[in-house]
Image (cartoon, rainbow, N blue to C red; front, side):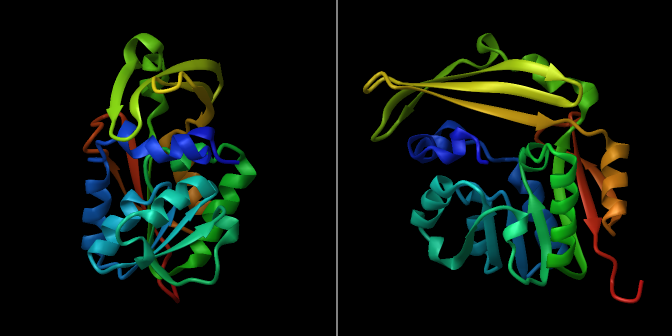
Length: 245
């Protein structure tokens, strides 16, 4: 199930305006260039920001997301017809031989169930050509990022053309071991509508993630720092071993 911030048509339509700084994608673009990827699978593509950046560079892209409202936004963007959009999760993947698979932002952490996580990694492994790479990020649980997720620290008002002012803030609702639940609230000044979106993230440590990748046949080639959040996240670069290895 997609969170309301991605699955509700009104929230999906303003998502990019509420989160305009996507400097986190620069590292993924560099990895795509370094690897010479010609076909990329973008899991949890959302409103298509990263998929369209890749398509603009002449890369063939398959974008997959469980939120139809977000895909509708992605399809309507300039160049949206250059990407193959698939409604669903990793279980909906058609036969592919991608050079690179990505899960940007919070995508990996939003897969909270252990079985769903294993299935996702297994499906991605099958969708990669031998020698292909998987890249994703996850917050370091030791940094306790959720401690800053409160109304006082996150409240803002965003003026959106054609929509008007939107108030937004986040508040943690529960911390249970590796699972952190939180709620975003959005208030639309134009008509006073209040919408909320509940989310859960799973915080996995570096050793846990490396073990999960190895169990599904991946080789971890590198664990990098996230340039936009130095010292706060791990960026995993894993590889499906070449044939015969």
